[in-house]
Amino acid sequence: MPVELEQVVSDASGGVRAEEIVAAYDANERDLFGFVLAVTRDAGTAEDLVQEAFLRLVGQAQAGRYPDNPRAWLYRVVVNLARSRARRRLIADRWRHLFVNRDVGRSPEDEFVGREQTGVLEHALAGLSTDERIAFLLATDGHSGHEVAALIGRSEVATRTMLCRARRDLRRQLEREGEA
Image 1 (tube, rainbow, N blue to C red):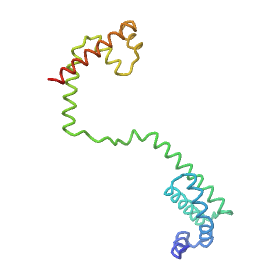
Image 2: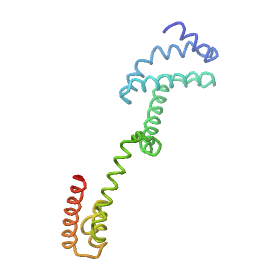
Image 3: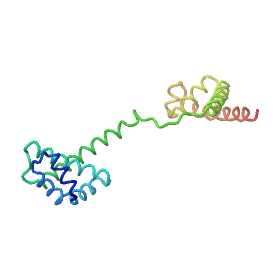
């Protein structure tokens, strides 16, 4: 261990058990790192957790609660730290979509084209009958044929036929709009 580290430990612990902390570091740092690396599968995280464990050991020495078996105590601390980190990561991943929006805004050109296409689609939809338009919009919203039929008050077969014709008419109208 470099001399600077001994001085840092001595300063951090107020000289309390500094030699024992340095000895615990020398004896356990590599093994702890290997263990935490196997648990977390991330070298950066493993380094952070091992450093945190030794900082907590210094804190225990300062408080006069130096453990009888520093090796076992350090392993318990890194296990607890790894569990806590994994738990926090799971919670963060579960709720991240509410806080992080990585969507890039659309360019003015894309906005214009999108509005133009929306206008063309709205015009084509206006060419369908009310029942056809309702059935088509329900189907595009993910409703099953059975659900669409029940919602518009028709049989499944009649609804399927109506949807097929509405899609065909809509496709033809959009093709005509595209040619113009």
